[in-house]
Length: 121
Picture 1 (tube, one colour):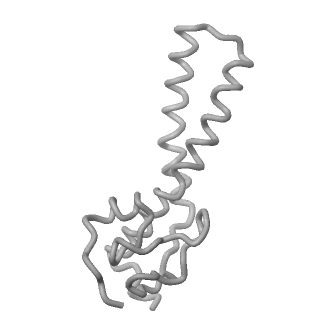
Picture 2: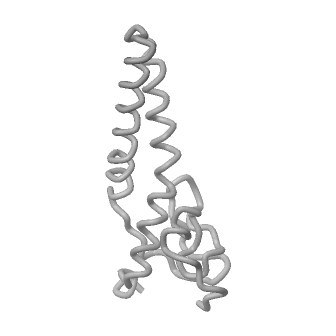
């Protein structure tokens, strides 16, 4: 396991879903399934366990955004309730699914940066 070039920060590598060691290899082998190791530097990624953290952070981000947008649309256009359902349910689902991998990537990168991986190797 040799770092190729140190990445800029845990935040950047996490948001890009890249290896926390080299910043180049892919972090995930599926939608949210962390790869066993980095294809570039060989970092063993078995230490990565973000638990429910990413989902909580996504909820805390997406909920206020959707609520504020729904209030603005309701005040400006006053649509019927079914229009709100047609707008905000899909928007909530799409935003949540789009933000889960980067948030999980950030938490895994922070685990690596703060040596949470030491006891698992």
